[in-house]
Image 1 (cartoon, rainbow, N blue to C red):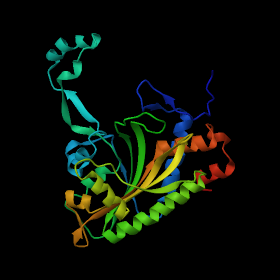
Image 2 (cartoon, one colour):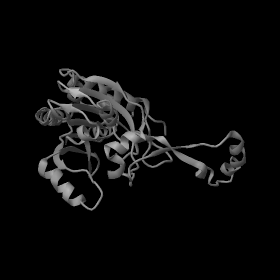
Image 3 (cartoon, rainbow, N blue to C red):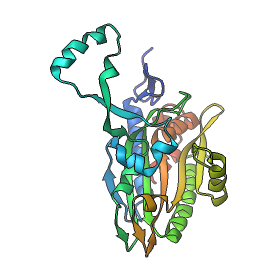
Image 4 (tube, rainbow, N blue to C red):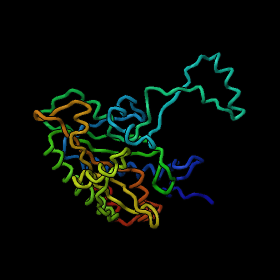
Length: 292
């Protein structure tokens, strides 16, 4: 069966949780990027281009490796000589353990777009809040491959750092703004208090504390029949990153907040809600996406 050129449905690959995106899908992601940029146009966000890898030391310092080891993808490489490799290369044809001689490098795969931002703030005194707009190809070793739970995915984030009051007010503003934006796209999100699944003996206590302080809200929308997933979130980190990356604001340890957009999940939610061909969507949905 010939695929219609306007069909934006991603194609699966042999690797679970990895998609091939056709041109129509990439066009939809481009429209989402433009729409998010219009949302952010009234604040002085500095745009940063973020690579798909990050320093392992940064991720360790941020606490991700200790908290989410099951999600982290590491970068390994071969450290031997070309002569050594000639002796090992036949193992590839034999489906042998050719990778056993690889060693972990100083890089890991980027698990979220915001982490490189915090490393740029080391030692800084913030006289005014700072704001960054970032997007990246991210990786997480998800345990399942249900629709929308990708291992390789695009994430856009708006990040701010400053005082506790600034970050609290900023997060509340963006939580409502993103909910209204998704509603305008016909997605009708549910806004739910959430927590991050931290490990360790105090996991339940930490999760309860997160919920009590209302640090994380997720905006959930179906991406397939009967399968709602978080497609965006609005988060306060309090002074966690200010402490570990040693930056201050107004004489105190700096606070941070971020708004995250799961671009692939938003695209999948739109395709589920309105059909697989964006060219056939209702005019008011297309207009909302274009900012008209």
